[in-house]
Length: 385
Image (cartoon, rainbow, N blue to C red; front, side):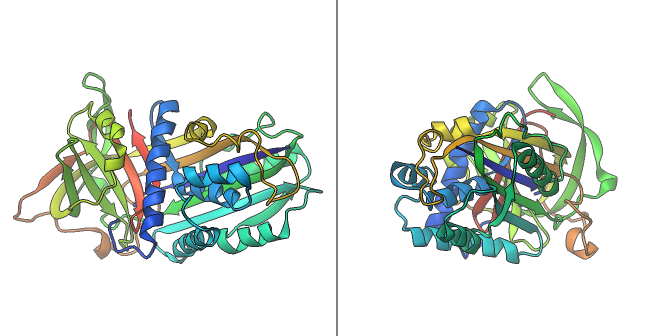
C-alpha cells in the first residue's frame, strides 16, 4: 500500500528579527532544515523556484509521531528534532499553527489534510493527535479517480494558481490508501506600497550578456538593510503592514554572485546587524509557479525508510511506502502585495527627504525568503526573467 504526500502553498511576500515567541532551538532547527532543503531542491530544479519548507517539515513531523523504529529516527534526524521528546514536538507545532492562525495581516493559512481510502481505519490516537496539534482535517476517497479529483481541487483552492493538474493517476493508483496534503497560503499587503505611477521598463541581467526588459517597481522608504562583507551581498527587508513578517531579499553584489551565497546558505539567516536607512528600491514584478518533486531531495537528505520499507504502524495497521513527495507553490509580487492596502498613510512615505539615500536595485538574480518571528517559512530564487 502506498502513501502520497503533497505540500501545497501560495505565497505573496515577508519582517523578521523580532523577539520570537517560538522556542529558539525549534526555530533554529526549522531554518537549518529550510536551507538544506533549498540546497537539495535547487540541485534538481533549473530556473526560478519557490517552495515553502514549513508544510514539508510539519508533514514529516506528523508522520514521525506515528512512525516506529528506524523510520521514526530517520525522520526526526532530518528535521533536526532527534533530541526532542514527542510531547515537545507536538507542543512546538501546535504553537506555530496557533500563532499563524491568530495573525490578521498578513494572513497565514496552514493546514494538514489527510485523505484515507474508504474502508481503511486510522488509529484513533493518531487521528486525535493530528487534529489537536497539527490542525488536521480528514476526508476520504473511494477510487484513484476520486482521489486525483479531490487533490487537484484542493490545489486550486489553496494556491489560486493554474497548476491544478499536478496529480494524475500515474501518482495515485489502486494501491494508494493514505494521502497527506500539507498546505500553506500567505497573503497580505506591503507596509510601503510601490507607487504604480513609478513602475517603469527596466533591465534585468539574467547573465552579464543576457538582458531582459521587465516591469521594474520603484519605492523610497525607511527600511532595514544589512551587508554581508564576506560573501558579497546585501539583505533588504520589505515589511508587511503590521510588521510581524517580512519579505527578505538577498542581492549579490555581482550579476554572477548568486552561487557564492547558495554555497554558503547556512550564513544567510545568521543573526546580523540591520540598519534602518532611507532606501531607494528597484524591484521587478515577478510571478513563479513551481511544481517540485521533493522525493529525491528528501532521500538525499537521509529519508530512505519512508520511501521504501516504512514502519508507520502507529498510524494504521498496514504496510506503507511513500510513492512521491511533491509541492505546488505560487508567488506573485507586485506594487500592492496580494490585495489593496487598507490605509494609505500606513503604506506610503514622503520621498522628498534631504538625507543620504542607499540604492537597492534588484536587476540581477536574487534569493528571497518569507520569515515570521525569525521562522523561515518560504524560500525561493529568481534566476531569469
